[in-house]
Image (cartoon, rainbow, N blue to C red; front, side, top):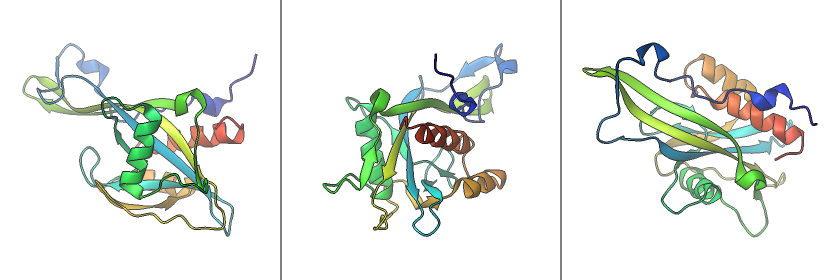
Amino acid sequence: MMKIPRAFVINLSGIRSCSKSTAKRALTSGPELPYPRAAVAITVRRKEPQTNIPQYVLVQRGTEPGKGQWSLPGGKIELGENVLQAAKRELAEETSLRENSAGDLRFSTSAGGVFGCSDAIYCQTGLKGIDVKFHYVISQTFAEWMNENEEPKLVANDDALDVKWWTQEQIALGLRNGIVSGNVTGVVVRAEALYAAGLL
């Protein structure tokens, strides 16, 4: 039996959640959010040409939840889309990165393209108890920029204010400074471990 490395079983859940201590209080989500929404996020990896240090694409969110914070590209899965279709669409919409005939961008297709799942739950205290403002169940996908001789052009579009490459060290610093979403580090660590094991 294959031993699963510790990094493979890291908790990918976001740091925001509704406290278990409020379970006896009224848990409401309002008419605009009667159930969790399916969403997708994309971890895009490349090697920085001069240093060979892995970098990852983050976008600065232009809308709630997490407006102004940096997170992995992604968004809601549309009716009839599978996870990979949604990932490719969202990545193109937010960063302008897309597959081409040269094969510069490669999406992992193992396990249907999904290497993990996480939650994004944003709550607030309301008159009836804890109100769930947003609740997304996020399928985590992976892509790699393969062309080491060409710099991929990143352009922020759709609901992204900005987009750029980050190293793991920069992501960790951004998390400590409160500008990077809470679960980005865990997702990137898991993706890097799976990539190193040849599973992505």
